[in-house]
Structure formats: structure tokens, C-alpha cells
Image 1 (cartoon, rainbow, N blue to C red):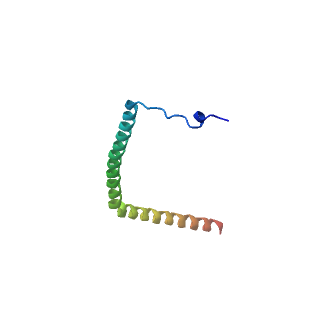
Image 2: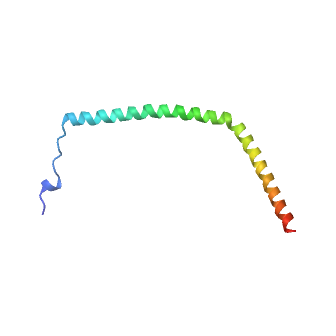
Length: 85
């Protein structure tokens, strides 16, 4: 059988300085995270607004590129069909 000391060891007393340091670092970490979360959220919101403003121009440019690509494919297919005859 084992003794009760092994089953229920006494808790270790932690120095008040260590406790204070732990809580201080925890608080500083939370404040640091909140500050940078707010900072990066603003940057991301600005980037999203800019993309929304530029979306119509980008979509128009992509439509033109798609039309050019389709035309080139049609021409290539026509050339292939003409050479096979």
C-alpha cells in the first residue's frame, strides 16, 4: 500500500514575486494582443474597402482578357480544322 503523502502531495508555495510576474505578463500579453488586433483590423478594413472600390474595373479588365482568350482559342481551333482538311 502507498502512503497518503504520495497520493495527495502538499501544494508547492509559489513566491509572491513569481505570482505577480505571471499576472503581469498575462495582462501585458492581453493588452498587446488587443492593441495589435485593433491595428490590423483597421488595416484589413481599409484594404477591403479599396478592393471593393476597384472591383468593377478589375472585373471589366478580366472580361476583356477572357474575350481575347476566347477569340484566340477560336482562331486556333479554326486553324487546326483548316489544316486537317
